[in-house]
Length: 294
Image (cartoon, rainbow, N blue to C red; front, side, top):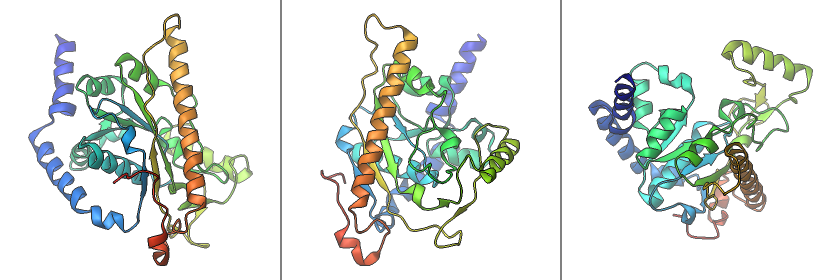
C-alpha cells in the first residue's frame, strides 16, 4: 500500500501537477513564446531539430556551460518550437527543497528532481526528458577546461534510458564557456585551494569555484553567440549476448563520443562565424545552420 501511495503521489506531483503549478505553467509558456523576438536578437545558432523523434519519447543528454540556465532554456525552447513538446529537465536534488514560490516556478518550467524513480515516471508517461550528466561539476571551469565533459561515475542516464526503451538524443552547447575565462588551471596552487573551498561550502566533491574574468579584467559577461546542435538518436535497445552492465557502459560511451563530436563541430562552425561575439554590425553575416532549423 505504501509503494502504491508513493507512486500515486509522484504522478500527481510531476505528471498531473497541482492546479497552481498548471496555472503558472501557462503563464511561463506564454512568456517564453512572447519573448522569442528578443531571444532572436542574439541570433542563436540552432541545428539538427530534424533529429528529434516526433513522438517526444526521447532523452536529451547535454553538456553544461558556465551560463548554466542558458543552455536549458535554449534547448527547451528549440524543442518546443520544433515539435510542440514540453521538455522536462532533471535538476539537482537540492532544488527539490526550494521554498514557495521558487519550487512552484521550477515545476512550472518542467523541472523535476533528478532521481531514477522520477525519470522512470516521466518516461512511463512518454515525456521528453533533459539531463546533464556532469551536473554542477561542469558549470565551474578552470583555465583549459572549456567544452569538456565531466561524466566520471555518471551512467544513470544510460541505465534509465535502457530500462524504459528511450532513445538518447545528444545535444551540444557552445558559447557559454566563453562568457567567462578561468584565470588558472585546476592543478595549480590556487586551483586546489578553490576546490577545497568549494567542497567545504557545498559538501560535494568537484564543486570548485575558480576565479574568472569576463570582459577585459572585469566580471561583466563577455557577449557570446550561443550554438546548439541536436545529434541523431542513439538506440538503447540491448543487444543479445551483452550483459546489462556492459550495455550501460556502451550506451554511455557512445553518447559521450557523439556529444564530444558535436561540440567539436560547433567549435568549427563558430571559428568561421563573424558574429560569434554578437557584433551588431555583423548580424546579417551570422553563420546559419546547414538546414532550416527554425
